[in-house]
Length: 334
Length: 189
Image (cartoon, rainbow over all chains, first blue to last red):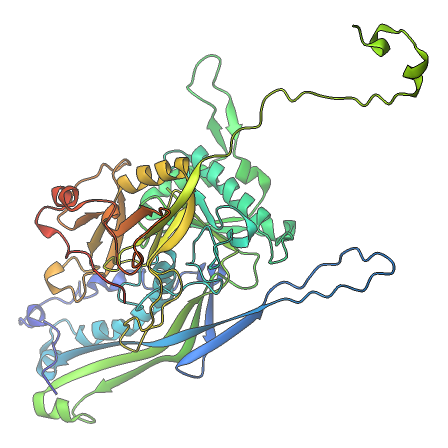
C-alpha cells in the first residue's frame, strides 16, 4: 500500500504550546444537518441493492358524460418507472503515530474524527447538487426527474408543457433588487403551483396545499432583501414626499401563509427556490444503501500501520440521489 | 335607409323577422407571437448539467443518460433539447446569459491542492451588487451554453456534437485571462 498523505501536524509539536485555541475551526456549526431539510427533501429511503427501481401511476381518468344508450367509455392510464443508482461516499484521514503522541494541543485525533461529523452536510449538498444541476464531487451527473426532464424545466420529457403549464416549474423572475420584486415573484411561483395540472388536465393542487406553507432557499448574500420581502410588515409605497409617504402592507405576511426562509452559503447568485411543504413526496430524495460506518487502523489491526507507523480513520456510506416529480418546487431564475 | 326597428316604423314582414344582436370587436385580435424552434443545451465540458435562464431550461442531455460505475455515459442520449421560443424569450435569455459568469472554486481556498476543479460553483451576476470583481477562474455562462435555430434543412449529423457556444472564444479570453478552459468537447458520450 502506498504511503498515505498524513495530517500536517508540525505546528502543534513544539514544547510548551498552550492548548487554549486547539478548537480552531472546530467551533463551526455549519456541519449540522439543517432543520428544514426534511421539509424539502425525502431522506433515508431504504435501498437493498446497487440500484433501486421505482414506479408510479399517472392520474386515473375523471368521470364524463355517458349519454343513455351509449356504451360505457373505458380509459386507461399509464405508469412510469425509473431507477436510482447508489454510489459510495468515503473519506480517510491518516497521521503518523508519533505526531499523535507528540501533539502538544492533544487535538489531532479529535479533529480527525470530525471528518465523520461532516457527513451531516452530505444530504444538503445532494440537494444543492440537484437544485443547481451541478454534480461536482458528489454525483457522476444529476439525474432527470421521472417525467424525463431535468429537475427544473418548462417542458416534460415528451416536449409538452410540464404539469400542463407553459413554463413548467420555472419562473422567470424580475430580479432581487427589492423586496417588492421578490414578493411578486413569490406570488407568481405560488400561482404556478395553483395552475399545475395532473396528467388528465385537471387541477393538481387545492387550497390546502397552496396554504400549507413554503420553504424559500436563496443565497445568504441576499439575506437583507429577502427579510425585507417576507418579514417586514410595512414598506413605503414610493419616495417619501408629502403626498406619497403611505405605507403598503406585506401581502405575504398578511396572507398568513407560513414561510420558512433558508438562506444558504451553498447557493450563489440571484436564483432562488420555492418549495411547497404540503406535498407528501418531495422533489429530491436520498436513498440509503449503507449508513455511515467508521473504522480505525492502528498497530493493533493494520499491517500498514505496523510497517509505517501511519494510523488512519476511515468512513464510508452508500447513497443514491434522485428527483421525483417536481410539482412541489419552483425555481425563480434571474 | 333607417333601421325599421330603431326608427320605430312597423311593416307587416318585420314582425316575423328575427333580429339577433350583433357586436363589432373593438380591435383585431393580436397576431400570434412569432416563434421558431431552437436547439439549446449545455456543453459536455460544463461543470453543471443544466441551467435555466429566462424561464427556459438548458440541459446536457435530452433524456437521462446511463452511466457505468466510473461515471462515464454509456448510452447515446441526445444532446440538448429542441424547444419552441418566441423572439421575446430569446431576447430575455440573451440578456440573462450575458449577465452571468461561472466561478469555479474550491471549499478550502487552497486551489493548488484542490482534488477536482468542480468542487464549488458560483454564479456571479455582473449587474448586481456587490459589484462584480473579475477573478482568474471566471468563465462566462454563455461559454457553456449553446442555442442554435433549427432550420428547415439541417446537416444529417447536426445533433451528434456540441455546436458553437453562445460566447465565442475571443470574448471569453477577454474575461478569463490566462485561465481559459479546455476547448469544447467535439462529440457526444
